[in-house]
Length: 228
Image (cartoon, rainbow, N blue to C red; front, side):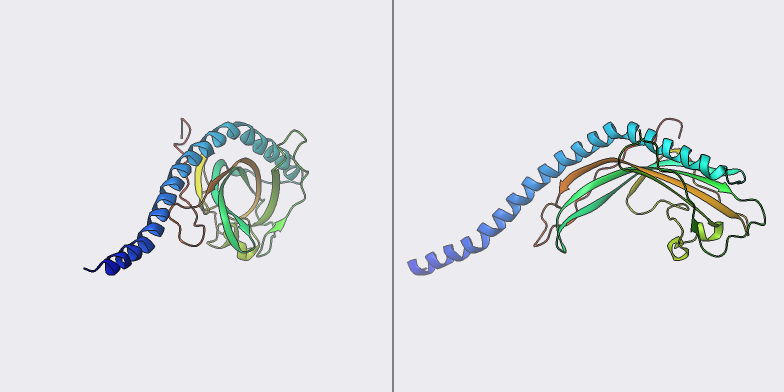
């Protein structure tokens, strides 16, 4: 092989191998960074969970007191869960990074007296704001409507809150209680729901993403508390 041909071959190999090497090296660095970020997210989640859970329960109790004052039936179900999902941090329409966002959701379901007319969709009920001692990112809402719509496969089509029949998207861990059993025909419910922020931790991008920042795989939430 002539010298010019060998030089050309080396240059061609360099053009191919250098970018590949940089890509693989960057991916390995991101992989290490993601592992550290997952550990940090778990630590921040564990640290924030007790206060967020207490805040969500306080907000739920306050909303329930206001709802019960208007007259409702028995409590059908009550549960609290930890829910985490990835949220993109965008520049325009392009994701630049991803955060792992966790909340505590507390839900109580009350049965309205038999014969209560509620229509085909859900309607919001006026409730007080959470107490001043609640975390800044805590809120509560209340709705009443037909139980069949609230537990439908697509409850939002009836203006109803979601995630009652089964967990929504993301990772969910039930902390206390159980989701409601299927409703009786014609049953009407009041659903009171509060939510408090637990943590928000930057995870970056998926290692070895090409061109655009892909969503990384977040860490597991662990096991349910004792007694579950």
